[in-house]
Image (tube, rainbow, N blue to C red; front, side, top):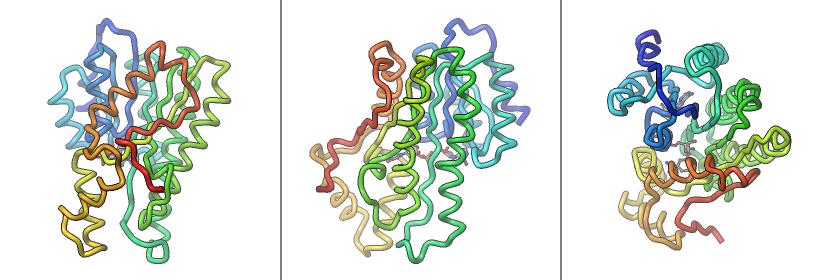
Length: 264
Ligand code: NAD
């Protein structure tokens, strides 16, 4: 942990302070990069220290700390480091989310169900409740990474869909509770986003259906109006937009970015 903390940099001129959970890879890393590019001071936390170290090597200026959002002691350590190193927080991006096993409900083990809830919901809550006092000081922005699985049913991913719907209620409630402090809270609902996770999801579906990867990819795109996969950078641009003056006139919204996914 100490080695990563040493990568904190001082003397940066942009005062926007951003925390991205699960910021070492995928969408979280794209979001972290987007804010770094805009000149913000960005702290990425992630449970995967090796991947986090790689991200820190690849993105000059990015700050990082290992943290498992399902471990309260880790979150406490994250916030004391954040307070010490950034001196506050303007933007919280609750990006961490795991899918859990791809199984029908009656075959999903209780501990697998619980693990998805612990990370996707309770971890997000524990991070957010510690961030709120800091965000009240800065009139900050909260962005929660939900999913198209927070709009539709998602067969064989019942725990995931339950948490992603849960994050919508979480977001709308935060927007109402915190609006008087000029804090905005919005949820982003990506559909199929390119990257390793998308590849894993398709492989999981193919395992269950017996179809090929190519057939599963075509099936996935069949329910989208626009027949392509969303690049993670587009999700990052949407997150960044929510911190601009126009974006900060929006709160309590659930924003799909999914090439118009339709499940009828
Ligand atoms: P990913 O698996 O590529 O990256 C997630 C990061 O979170 C990883 O670096 C991982 O190490 C980290 N992480 C996992 N558990 C953690 C924990 N307990 N504590 C701290 N860090 C942890 O995922 P992604 O595809 O980039 O997805 C990011 C978010 O976007 C998730 O919430 C996901 O549900 C959501 N989402 C993704 C897609 C997609 O197609 N990729 C679609 C809809 C929604």
